[in-house]
Every structure is written in structure tokens, then in C-alpha cells.
Length: 331
Ligand SMILES: Nc1ncnc2c1ncn2[C@@H]1O[C@H](COP(=O)(O)OP(=O)(O)OP(=O)(O)O)[C@@H](O)[C@H]1O
Ligand SMILES: [Mg+2]
Image 1 (tube, rainbow, N blue to C red):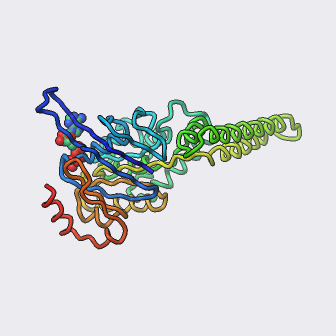
Image 2 (cartoon, rainbow, N blue to C red):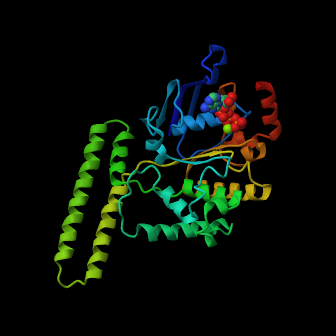
Image 3 (cartoon, rainbow, N blue to C red):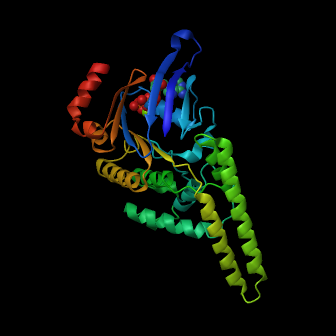
């Protein structure tokens, strides 16, 4: 769950009081796990500002931002990066132009991690995952794995960014343990004890097993390596059960720069990924039709606040005219 409470954010580019611009004026917004929310609102109504606050690009003047019960209001952008996947309007922003498709995807996997532990089979395992995902996109990307991202079309680049933003994360064991405590509701001490004990026991079992394998004279070198890898994976899976962070997907007009056909394709893909992987998603769009077609909740921003918030059946009944009328009355 993502919860924004009483968020106030103003900008002042000149320092003069008359230039003070209050963009968000006590914004309250709760997004439940698994919700797919479409967001509309006039230019300058604070949609991107809200995304920037959620991801820690900027900080609120007052108010709190909570994720899964943990307060992340003051957390730096890099340290909360692993909780969010983000796709911007500009296809140039999500990928590194000078790096290949594969290199970009590898970076995505390591998002928010300062050091990536060397894991057996890490590269091979993920290479396969990438390629299969790219094939599904049907944009010819699977045949351009070594092409520089800068040479791709806008649509291809957005599709790649979308995939990167929704890649399964592999946080380090340390992050998993830390987040388990940080996001635990209730007794944090107890949560800490629980995760640390499970970790210690799992690690001890793995090391014991490793010693056994290494001492086993009937095994060849390659067999030993294989068995140690299996034992490690078992330990790794045990630790990953404690991974409580479910990434949130933030899409800020991510199809606005694409031609209608490609935009439709990327949107269909977005919907598919969101549904299949159960991502909690916020999608900003100026396209009323898309805002109505996709998602199960719709929010309208105006005057620094949320002026419309509908979900389920009520959303399904909404028509483009209703939204346009609403736009007229609030602005
Ligand atoms: N870093 C900043 N410094 C100064 N003003 C800013 C900054 N970021 C945003 N603003 C101002 O805040 C207001 C809201 O901007 P924001 O980008 O959130 O709007 P938006 O709803 O995303 O609009 P659009 O639909 O055009 O993308 C605008 O008037 C903008 O100029
Ligand atoms: Mg914007």
C-alpha cells in the first residue's frame, strides 16, 4: 500500500514570495496493493510532481509518504529506487543510449543496488528471461540484443523501458532482511528476530552442506560445483520468501510520444504485464479514452487536489463526456 498524507509541495524559482507556486495543497491519496490507477488532469496540475515525490526526486514541504506501512518520506531517491519502476513520456529518458539492449536490462535488474553479489548463473538465467520477454513484445527487439538503445525507435525504446521497469527484482539478502523489518506492521523487534534467525539457520545449513559436498571424494569437480549451486539456490529461495517489497509501476504519459499504432501496442503490453504480474500501477495519461479503458480506478487532479476518484463499476460507467464536463467545472 502506498499512502500519501497531507502532502504540500510548492516551488519558488525566484525566491520572491509572489512567485511562490503551491502545486499540491494537502494531497491525500491511498493506493491499495494490486490497483491499476489511471490519472488525468490539466497540464501543470501536479501529476508528475506527485510521481517525483513518490520516487524521491523531490521532497514534500510537509506531509508523509508511506509504503507498505514504512515511512519513506525522507528516504533518498537511490535508496527507494528498488521499490519503483518508472516510465516517462520521453523515450530517451528510461534507457542509456550508449548501452546495448542487454546491458540496459542488466542495469535494470541491479536497480537500487550498490553492489551486486556474484550469483551463480545470474547472467545466463537473466539473459534467457530478457530474450523471452522481448520476443513477446513483437517489436523485433529480440533480434537486436546488442544494438545500442540509442539506435532504437521511440516505440521500441519505450517497450524496452517498460520491460526494464517491470523486471523481477533480485534484492540482496541484506536488503531483503532490512526491508522485512522496515515494512513489518506491528512488532518490529519480533520481525527482526524472525528473519535473522531464518537467515542464520539457512546459511548454516548451506555451509554445512557445502562442506559435505567438498569432502565427498566420489564426486567430480563439476558435480561438486553443481551440487553447491543447488544448495545455494535452496538457501536463496528460503531468504527470498521474506522479500516483502512489491514494486510499484509509475507510468507518466509513457505512450504520448508514440504513433497511434505503437502507442496502442505499448498500452496493450502494459495492461498485460500489469495484469499478469499484479503490479500496483499509476498511469498518467491525457487520453481520456485510455484513462477509461485501462485500469480499475481513475483519479483526476485539479487545483492541487484530487477532484475525482472512482473505481470498479462506477468507473466502468463513466464516459468521455463525463470526464470532459468535469474538466470544465474544475478548471
Ligand atoms: N522543479 C520545479 N521547479 C519549479 N516549478 C516546478 C518544478 N516542477 C514542477 N513545477 C511546476 O509545478 C507545476 C506542476 O507541474 P507538473 O509537472 O507536476 O504538472 P503535470 O500535471 O505533470 O502537467 P503535464 O500534464 O503538463 O505533464 C507546474 O506549474 C510546473 O511548472
Ligand atoms: Mg507531467
